[in-house]
Image 1 (tube, rainbow, N blue to C red):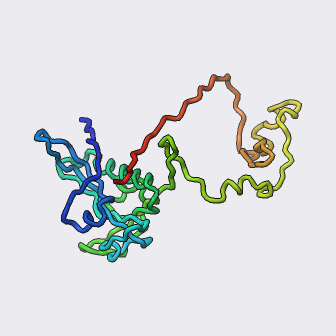
Image 2: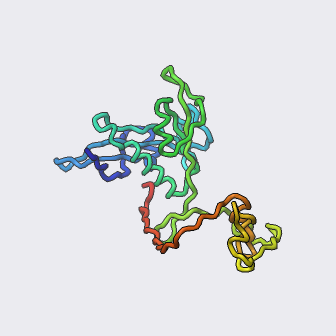
Amino acid sequence: MRYTLPKIQLTPCHPSSFRQKNAAELFLCAFVPQTDSGRALLGYVDGVLSSEATLTSESMSTHVPGARTVLIHGVCVSPNVRGRGIASALLLEYQRRLAAAGSYDRVLLIAHEDKASFYERVGFKSRGISSISFAGTPWLEFEWVVPVDTIDSQGISQAAIPPGLLAALQNQSALPPRNGQLFSSFEKGILDVSQTSNRYDLLCVNERCGSVILKRGVAILHERESVQVSVCTRPQVGYENNPLA
């Protein structure tokens, strides 16, 4: 049976808790509508902010407003709806909103070894045994590095350009000049530049670039019938105005 996850919304889950009171923006809950106009909680993800780059007992017990490390305390799903992908969907949506907010560097959490594959499937990487120990069993610390995204005027996520990158690419002295030869200047065309493999480096024709597109000796020529190539347009992807609120 195919299960459809209901609309995910951020809303208070435990009004009396320290984390809900102090870090409500880091709660993400999944609810399903009820016939009596109410709703039932399916699951939630919650956390706090820390100025530390690793997870400790002290950092887990406090919340540092404005810090850039998110510490996830819980990824919880109601027992009667487990195994339907709700936890994965919640985490992926949580990650999407954190990336869109542009205010966070990393997400940390701890889990037992038997949950490692689950967190790795949604992009977390193990950092080894955690310094935190309780309940008599060791815990692993996991990290997800928040991608640096910007949102353009059309609501499309674009990878941010690191400072100085464009200037470095435009710097003519960054690469030594290369004395290339145009393909059209070879008398026998492709036969002169490729036999069992390509005999020369393939360079960018832009004189201000000169980058090596294909290294010598790594490609083999295969001939086949020409085909018509169609160009696909990029779909428009929208983001919510308040990605984590």
